[in-house]
Length: 364
Image 1 (tube, one colour):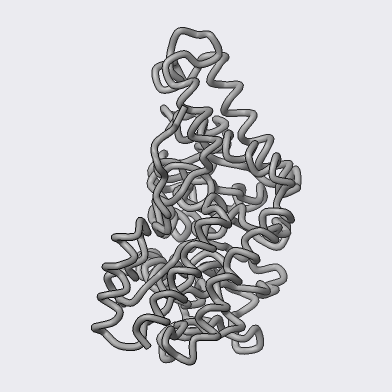
Image 2 (cartoon, one colour):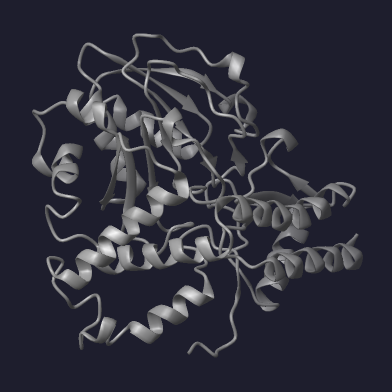
């Protein structure tokens, strides 16, 4: 059993995992299901692993009420490979895709799409330093678009979509790498949802793709085998050796979410955790300044600056000494960031809020 002192872990990813899941993995590490082997040692064609694989798919389907006309895939390459796979499969040379720019990851996604076809910015908040999510009425896309792409949560800038655009017959594709499993979502509003696991789903190494089956039938076939979604859909994500341990851990995280009361209960807990920290920011008389506008604030990544650069450095240094990990903002923007993913305990967020108040009282 894990008995060592745990850090106050606010890493943006890979991020905190539920202690109960880590303890379960520790117990089963060298002898899974009395097989005499770790899950990492057994064949991905074995009955033991097949049961783990299929159970993870079934639990994800149940938690999100995923309709039967969607496939659930376990891929590799992180969300970043999806920046390439999406246009490679669905953006023809004579087609246009619309991308909504809300941060660095959507910038990376549109850059990859330009290699395969025409793209347009359906909306962007770059001029406002990505402080907010575009208003729905600002989004301009065409009914002839191959798809519309969004990033549901922006880890670097701390913004999150509260309401998704309605794109009608045009498939809406969402990179949900940093807020998947954090709240209920109506999957039927999307053509594709994809997410790297390392924020809320499990350890890094596995990527979940939820894809509507009719899109598979329309996909480009003149591309490499491993980059076709159909390859993985046709083989239950077992065309080649999958990231078996990552999928095992993902399944255990899904069980943990079920035990916590499902996605509605997880969302409520996330709201309460984030409120602890946002309240300190809002009541600090600008000693702490949030980056995101209030209506676009993320429940997963809380980004802020301290009164001045010297105090900010001191804040981060003292926080590190006090046991807080991962509070530095992304290297591209600086500042501070507290990532409060599902597995970050309420008590950890409370400890940070209390530290922030104490620091302000000492230095204002």
